[in-house]
Image 1 (tube, rainbow, N blue to C red):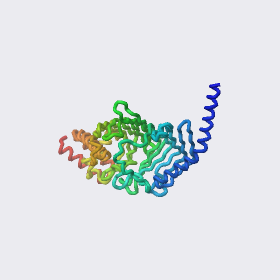
Image 2 (image 1 turned 45 degrees about the vertical axis):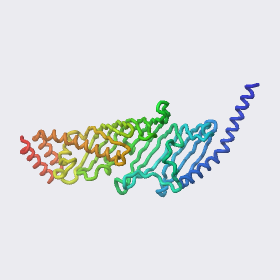
Image 3 (image 1 turned 120 degrees about the horizontal axis):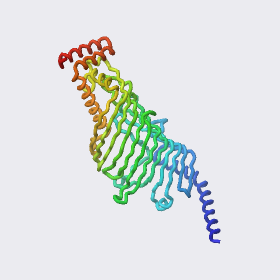
Length: 382
């Protein structure tokens, strides 16, 4: 008799839960849309909404949040957004989400003319006056999963009209866990994706990103990044046009209480360049352009080198992007200079190679290259 009553009770609970989610789901969708509009000040659209009380899950389909700054442009949209929540903590007003999952999300971000990544400015969003005094987030997501996402970065800083960089096939798994020893939230990040549909990148990191100053360590890898696509980022004031080439870089990052140290190993392959103007009269990386072209030719378009970047993340003047750009250029310039120096240690070979380039360039540039070769033999000795 006991088991019969127990099974009847369980069946009734299941039926009630099923009826409840059928009734509640449409109202839940309306509540979410209204609340989103009140907070963000934009018309958020949602397709179907499904609720499972027993599993503690909400599924929203075809979510679209318009951009508050750019007309006819979305900020983010997703084919499916799934939230797994703990029912009991919610009853005690503890916002702890078990899993937040996004399928095929699309995000658009802008970097302005000053080089600052623009955050969305929602009209009705008001900052809490006591926000500065908060030490813990009001909502904790234990796990964030992104499947087959994409990101478009519209960069107004490097060119006009702006260059658009596309990140696709983004798959991300972020897990937050509480350390029983330090009583801090430790975050594990596993992110992979493609850049412009061809190059690949991956991030594998672990650390305390909540506390200040932050501490973490991780590996970042980029493979087969096309150089011509990113010419606006490095091509200004160069005496050459990069017609081909691929960047591969492995970075090891270690940050201890805000003190960042990054070791980078770089390999640039299949570099193809063309001179702008007369390469015998222009300078590239503080060297005559004609020497650099010859060095790249001898190395079969491949350059390998290492460089380091370090600094304190809490200092306002420290910006990781410009620091990496400067260190990368300096390391590559030293590598090329060393190669050219080895070339010049053999004056007869150097003059011959420079004359070979002159023949390829032809006419006036070829004559000047020939004269440079003759002068090298006179100055450095036969």
